[in-house]
Length: 389
Image 1 (tube, helix red, strand yellow):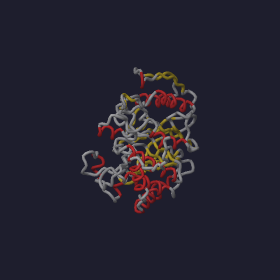
Image 2 (cartoon, one colour):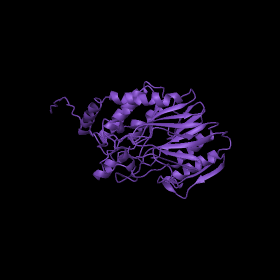
Image 3 (cartoon, helix red, strand yellow):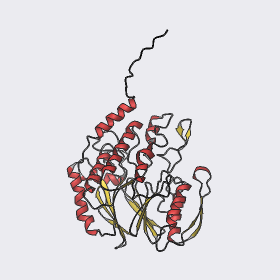
Image 4 (tube, helix red, strand yellow):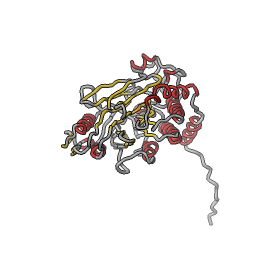
């Protein structure tokens, strides 16, 4: 007869779990710096508030925070997390309608468990703030920079990691709309204003021997289903001032696609919508990024897409193509003057830790009474610029 000895199993966290707990504990020690929350509030009170009416849609906007689990006084790091904490804290006391992040919340160069911890913590901050929010996906947010630098043979993020940590929380809010449970296109309405959010990192998650067929960091695009959803939303948009947001720029000033796939088709949809046209939009591609769609924008009243707003480029720029303003906002991530990856735009700001130039953020006020989209920048950002809607 064999005697079985019952032993109590001792729980020991796996290394990844241990690192995640450490990261989470450290993040929770981060606090907003009163100097910055006061500064952001003063910018709003002095510059934005005098332009508000009950009909305005007012957004607090950050982009490209590039959070990393390192303490850096002159480059990407935990300062990106603090910028979000400080902006959200300041806005809790301000008449802002939404907090918006245009993507690249993380740098995507940390170990996967650390990057997931950063995303989880940051989304908790958005969820705990007083205003509803929308966080877009950027090309760094799938952690492919880590895969690229470490030459690993398996994808560090699984298919649904980013969706579960970030995207699904957007759509759990009653004020955020989408056509169905799988649609990647979201929108919000306030009076005669409609803001639409596109995913410019709409890349299929396909593994070839463990590694991804497409590197999300290097490839930007929009697939047919998202374009079909955009067409459907616009077909049902009647007598609205429409502003569209995304992470990456869709086209160049010459009108050529700035995405790897289908940025020019989005621009064609916008112009067809503004012209009240009906017809078909297609490209010559097959497979993952092929497009062949019909549209009918003849019954949309006076609706118009006036502006497309994005980040991604780490500088400010605006240009008009076919009557539509394309507006690029500067990165929140601190880009110190002496670092090699710093853009000329940020080098001119000479951005420094614990100074106003460390930050870069915006209040965007869409004002149908004045027929203007007004952008009020703070930190390393242009103080004021406006565009017609």
